[in-house]
Length: 219
Length: 253
Image 1: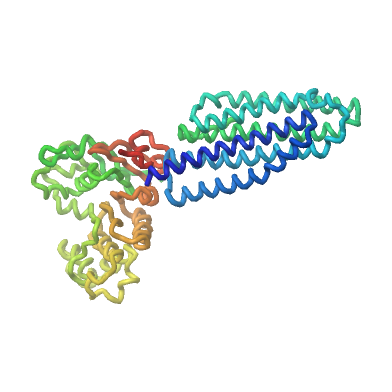
Image 2: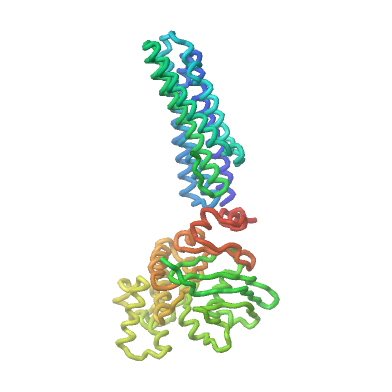
């Protein structure tokens, strides 16, 4: 019976990893659409929302089924706990990608101030956050905790970037009030990216729990 | 709440002939807690709890070294009285084994052979024991009926009542629910949770979920050795030993 559980769990884990990659692709493409004002790409990101939500529901139900049928303990239980965290964080990350795509669709007609995005370091912040999420997902897959060992420092960098973006955006808005609409949207996006970084840390905490059984707090 | 140790073993070894069935077991069992022993068949868990009330004395090829103390007294000392030890450390077995007598006589039997003759006193003991075994309401109108007519779950609770009747301090349970259906099992588990308020309960079970549900402490045994002993939550969430982890997650073999 345990062999059946372990083989079903291994298969479900691969689906959870795929869900994580779907969420990352939504975030990455949302940012890509933002940088290039690509409304087609933004629309495709928005269309992925249903796939994301369907997968989340399906995998959550699968986790509950595994718990109900097998009552896993020890490492098996910790893997389920970690997987549930990966699922819920992936849903949030994917939805932030969709929210960024919505900003693109709402603001793409305004082609003024194209320098703002890079001026505000949003692509740099997105790269850092996506790299953290990818490392968390890889750690979940491989159980290699080295991949998430510096998440606390990396998250500090992301938080610092958000503060920098906040200050820079205020400067832009003071210099030219016509930038206020775009800058306000970009400040929201910086906030989304910061939250995605937090989700990367939350996944890392649960991966640590899955592998070692110890709870850690990544600040 | 502070805990006091009621049974201590030190370097306990038991041989059946040449077979070393219990190997160097050192453990402390707390009073008024439920301690579960888990492990694969033949790992020595039943043999170990049978040492606690000297049930293995009845096996001719059995030899024991090391020490078992009950309240600090060596139960294998020359002057230790096995009958008195078995009164204080009662046992419930895998299959319900009521005497082919009435419900009342099953419970009154123990106190009677320990010298209680007064009918009123016996009535009190029978009622109290049956109440403590959560059976009174189901059998109070059929005390004179044969115990063999009770359901399996009721018979097992009757055996628990029979154990309680002689006022033990420790109740050993050797797979007490393995012959019962889930509802009867649930009743016994609720009862175990209640019994620990007054007694130390030590339960051997093959059902790991049961160990997780009912016990405060869990010991995992493998080929005669106590591999790991600890808080039940710790054992089932994060066992220290890989062998324990492999067993409870079914990765054995």
